[in-house]
Length: 107
Ligand code: 2BA
Image 1 (cartoon, rainbow, N blue to C red):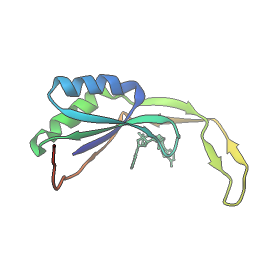
Image 2: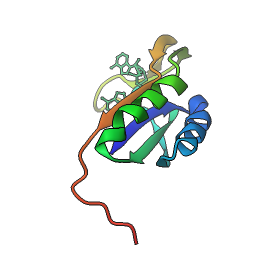
Image 3: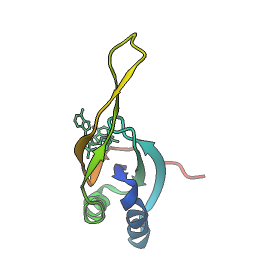
């Protein structure tokens, strides 16, 4: 199982390429914990030997970008006010996790 967190801008292209190459994928709308901006999480179930190819497809279709953001940071526990400040961060093309799946059932 490959889990990939990608930027929304890349998700349509990645989805298309995965399908073209015969992979099954599920897209989940997700939110980054740091930026609190929308991103897309792909769940791609495939055989072990095809994992390197999946990673290559992700790498080729997701690009890193610099983003100016205004995150909202709590000042501290018990304090109701929030501090906003502009910040430039490089958001990676994809954060990819590979994990073993014990069982898979499809009914
Ligand atoms: P976010 O958590 O919104 O993070 C967006 C970008 O902000 C990150 O890009 C990184 O460049 C920066 N960033 C994150 N936490 C930071 C911190 N504590 N201090 C300074 N800068 C920070 P990426 O590393 O490429 O991550 C893009 C998105 O991938 C993340 O969105 C998150 O949704 C996911 N992600 C990345 N690493 C993850 C991990 N270890 N576990 C779960 N999700 C992860």
